[in-house]
Amino acid sequence: MTANLALATAAIPAAAPATAARAAAAEVQIDIRNVGKVYDSKTTHQAVIALDGVSLRIKKGEFISLLGPSGCGKSTLLGIIAGFQSASSGHILQNGRPISKPDASRTVVFQDYALFGWMTVQQNVEFGLKAKGLPKAQRAEIARALIATVHLSGFEDKYPHQMSGGMKQRAAIARALAPDPDILLMDEPFGALDAQTRVLLQEEIARISTEAGKTVIFVTHGIDEAVFLADRVVVMSPRPGRVRDEVLVPLPRPRTAEMRSDPWFVSTVKDLWETLKPEWQKGD
Amino acid sequence: MEAEADAGRLPVETTRPRTTMLQTAFAGRPMRAAVGLTAFFAIWQAVTQLNLVDGFLLPSPVAIAEALWQLALDGSLWIHLGASLQRVAVGFLFACIVGLALGLLCGWWRTVSDYVRPVIEALRPIPPLAWIPITILWFGLGDAASYFLVFLGAVFPVFIATYTAIRGLDRNQMNAALCLGAKPWQLFTDVLIPASLPIILPGLRIALGVGWMCVVTAELIAAQTGLGYLIQQSRMLFQINNVVAGMVTIGLVGFAMSAILERIERRVNAWAPSERS
Image (cartoon, rainbow over all chains, first blue to last red; front, side, top):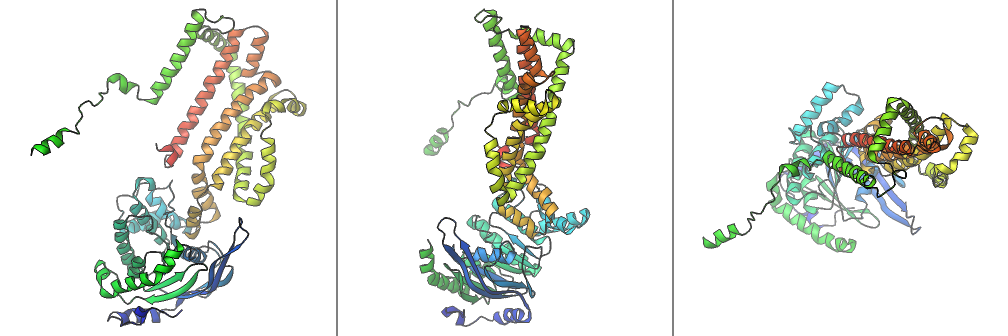
């Protein structure tokens, strides 16, 4: 699991100590221990190994990108962390306790938004607060503040079908933040958006996650997105899904647009692409 | 400059269709419905008035209207209509309770569906008409027999709609609700029900239509009141005008029920893609 990329051992820019110190000081929040997932294929009667011996320790406040081609099991891993499905072997601990089912300490942002179409933006964001049993006035107040955070003020009474993809995903992010979770799980959240919207939302999520101080696990197959956002990029390989590499990102947070032209950023993205290319091509 | 002027001239077609007042009036759906129905009755009237069809075989709309007026005046129309509506309401209610419950159970639990659906799919092809002898044996002549036949006609569409709706629920939406901390009741009332209404409500509308047909069928044979009974009795008395008057009432009431339900659907499911064309 040691980084076999040349870039990981390269000279680390001056900003590194702060990040490293912050990460070291925080305790392990999510401890993924030797997790495997096997599916029984109903059509071919063959077991499909989606995940094989995945171990990963995630510290409080850390931003992790799970990077890999399609079919590498990164979304499956996220689903197991969320509690939507169970691991076939191994287990995942959250603050020392095993995760068995979904709860509001780990909320998810989905690629297809999964907003409730029959609710307004306001009602969508209030959903988790209602589940918590908060009184109406307080719910409305918190939701309005979050809607402002994701720059959707004025759209409170719109329905999801009246908004663009980018706006829907902003609403979904506000909804996921509403119950004040410890961990935000994002499953290729910008995958369905156009390039410009994606870049804008990447910067938004960089800002919001830093401000809110949440632990974030961000699943993506976009290399630049993974590196731009994360403190640590976990690279996965497909069939069976394994952790193949880890890259520590020494760029300071919050991340800003100009860091995309930082020489370290550019070379890291390029090197990652070179290493992953054969696998990506195979995956297709 | 010249090229620009040419380019400017080309795409501007001045033959844009002018909308007249008549066209605006006919753009509305209710207006078109009224025109369609009026034309239908007008052609019917013409066919009978010109003696293209024997007035005894097919009474003219005017004659039927007179018959209806008479039935309304002596009150028998309302008694029969009321009896039919009451029966369809009771039978439909039972069909909703059973159909929704079974649909929910089968949609939610694969195992339940594996056991229950074959039974339902085997019962479903039996037409309500074929059930009549055994229905009379079980319930005798009267309201109970009609309730049962309406129930039989309506329960399958309710079941299928509910089952399909629950099976088709978006997994991600359910997961989203769960990870936001939704308790089972909130999941049911705030997610499961509203998400499945766009499929369940049209199913209920179809079921009510089938139930309405069944009640008339039941009354033709197994009742002493109702529109079906009115038709049957008039047939024996050779009051062909009343027979068709009964049929027209059935048609118009069924049309009205469907229209009302559709209106409710549009309102409830305004958010759904199916209602947004």
